[in-house]
Length: 266
Length: 234
Image (tube, rainbow over all chains, first blue to last red; front, side, top):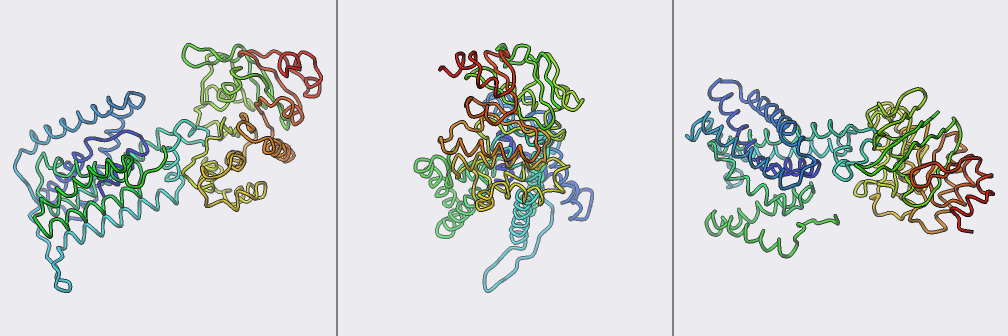
C-alpha cells in the first residue's frame, strides 16, 4: 500500500520522497487527534486524514519538489531527506514523544480455527480497494493515462495538450492521499510516535526497489513476496527472523536482479 | 494560416534560427528541406511551443503562438509529430492514440476520431492492444501520425517522418502524407529526403545553418541548379 503511493510519485515525477513515511506519521497523528481528542466519528476522521495528507502531498510538491525538478537527483534526495528530519522534529515538539493510540480495540474473528484480527482484515480490504481504484484511475481516465504517459516522456507532454504542472500536482495529491489511507489503517494496529516512520519507511523503500521503482505491478508482487517471507519466517522462528530473511532475500536479489524483480529496459 | 516573421530561437547560448520567415496557407503542403543541423527540428519545436522564440512572431489564424502556453497550442489546431516519433513505448497503441485526443475539445469525438485513424491505418487497429514500443518502425510512424490526428488538427507538423526507416517504408510514409493531404489537412513537413518530399509538397523552403536560403514551388526547386549543387550533390 505504502509502496504503491511512493511508486506512483517516483514513477511520475522521478523524485523519491524520502520523507514518505513521515507523511504517514502525520496522518496517524491526524487520526489520533480527530478521533480520540476531538471525538469525531471514525469514518469522518479517516476521510479528513486522507484529504489532509493529500493536501500535504501537494504542498510538499509545490514547496520543496517543484523548485528542484531540474536539479541533480542527489539534491532532491537531500531536500526530501531534510523534510524527513523537519517533520520528525516538528512532531516531537508538537506532540511529544509518548506513544499514542486510538484506544480502540477491534474484535478478533475466528474463522475455521484461525484467528484473524478485524483490523488486519479491514486493512487488507481497504488496501485492495485502494489499489483497484488507483488502477482504474490510471487505466480508464484521461488524467490517469496522462499520469502514465508523463512517466515515460515528460518533454513532449505539451504536444498532447497536457499541462505537466497540473498532472504533477494531481499525482502528488494522490500519493499523499494514499499515505493518508495507509495512516488510517496503520493507526488501527500500531501506536503513534514521532519516529514511527522509521519502523516501516525502510521496508516501503525496499519493496519499491525490489519491484523496480516506478513499476506499479512490480510493487504489488514485491510487497506480497516480502510479506510472505516475513510471516512464514516468523511462523517457524521469531518474527524478527522473518525480517532477517526478508532483508537477506533483498540483498541476494539485488545481486541477482539489480533492476528489480520485474525489470524492464530503461 | 501560419506565418512566421523573423523568428530567432536557440538553446541556451546556441542560436539555431536566424530571422526565419515563412508562410503556410490553408490547404497547402509546405516542405522545409536542409542538411543536418540546419535548424529544421528547432523550427518545428518553435511552432508547437516546445521552444520559445527569442524574437519574432509566430501567428496562427490571427493568434500569437509565441504568447500561448505550449499545452494550449494543440487546442488551436496544431499537431506536431516529433522527430523520432516519441511514442509512449510502454503503453498500448490505443492508449497512445488516447493521449493524442487528450485536449477537452477532442474527448467527446474520441470514438469517431479513433475510427477515422484506424481507417487510415488498418494496421493500427490490428495492433491496438500491443505496446507501441514493440512495433516496427513503420508501424510506429503510423501510430505517431495517428496520435497527432486524434486532436483533429488544422495544421499537421511532420518532423522527419522518413528518418530511420527502410527505403520501402520511406516510400510508404510519403504515400501516407499524400493521403493525409487529400483529406484537406494543411501540412508543414521537414525532411532530409529532398527528392521525395519535393514530390509531395506544393512549396518548399531551403533552410541552411539557421537561415532560409531559397524558397519556391516544389517543382521549380526540384529543377533548380542551386538546390542540386548545394544539397543533392549531383
